[in-house]
Amino acid sequence: MTEYTYDVTDVAASAGPTPSQTVGPFFHMALPYDAGPAVVGPERPGALTLHGYVYDGEGAGVPDALVEVWQADEEGAFCGTPGVYEEPDATGFRGFGRSATDEHGHYAFTTVRPGAVPTTDGAAQAPHLAMSVFARGMLRRVVTRVYFAPDDADPLLAAVDEDRRATLLATRDEGGYRFDVRLQGPDETVFLDVFAR
Amino acid sequence: MSSFDDGVRKDDLDPPYLFADYASTVLRSPGKALLVPPPGLTELTGPAFGNGDVRDTDADLTVHGSGEAIGERIIVHGTVTDSLGKPVRSSLVEVWQANAAGRYVHALDQHPAPLDPNFVGAGRCLTDDEGRFRFTTIKPGPYPWKNHTNAWRPAHIHFSLFGRAFTQRLVTQMYFPGDPLFYQDPIFNGVRDERARKRMISSYDHGTTSPEWATGYRFDIVLGGAEATPLEH
Image (cartoon, rainbow over all chains, first blue to last red):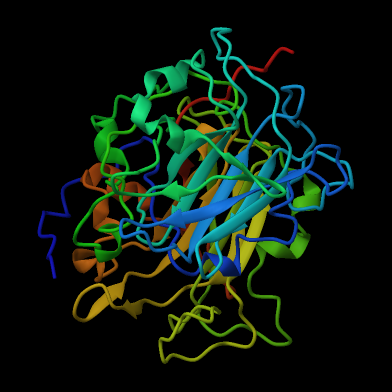
């Protein structure tokens, strides 16, 4: 056991952002909700399954991860309608999704391919969605992007070493797209620093 | 964007991915450097929340059984603000915690402490126009875990916050002042800068303590970044 023996009496908390802590192993009692995996309603044209596995550094599925996504709709517009917990209408669009992994580390969402959205500078980007993964053993979340097709003109994809680009690409499979998250190792997913601090 | 000149380096604010004292980080920590993406609108926006996301009783964790929950009844309140000190309004706050005996209502919690049939330990609310939230709950107990010999988690309440943008999303834990277990906890101490670490400790708030009913604790949360400029389409 490490004893943390600094002086705890003299230092006051300073004003500033609150630090991150792990989501821990017991979030299932609070965070997952029935409509969580439904980024869109089931009858929305183009609805597809985006699914995959979260793997640890030994290639084992992470059975207690929480995966969240946020994305634009097919036209590149973001949902401004309040509410995430309620089931979207049959053809509705929510934009946000939350899926806890199962005992094999598998997550799944029902969603659509988003339209392209630019950077704040107006530069074009290939269609993508944003993904967070939280888990026990992760003191902070990891963030990545899920792209649906290679695009050398995308500023992020272009900035990633060629041999790692595939980690940001979902691959077609029956019913939709598969995107695996590898937290560590030679095939580690490219993770992003988007943390507003 | 931050208006804080708080002396805390960004890299020391959040805990590292790999913190070997917390054994579970060893296989779940990225080893490669994070990439800073171009400032895309996907990350700078986020979901909006509404009254349909919460019921009135969701903010009182003590009223979901047929009888009184057991333990020290407390009121936990505070504000959610951005880096410029502006309130984060109508934003979802989700909490979960152990009961007074240190036991979670979760199949994987094997701590041989009693469950309380009148306490589940999950709640949520929306912040109001001043960014305030308020929960009534039971003070959670500490509980053992297997990270190291005789390891115990300091009492804490898990908090999940959204802010306005994907970049502001935060999951953290609220601790209680003077907890004797801090010194051996690698999760709390994973935050390496002490000034930042203390931001996770609530303060006893006698002004909120309700006579002959509940003691009060205050926990103010600052999300990084400022509210995004409204988007033009």
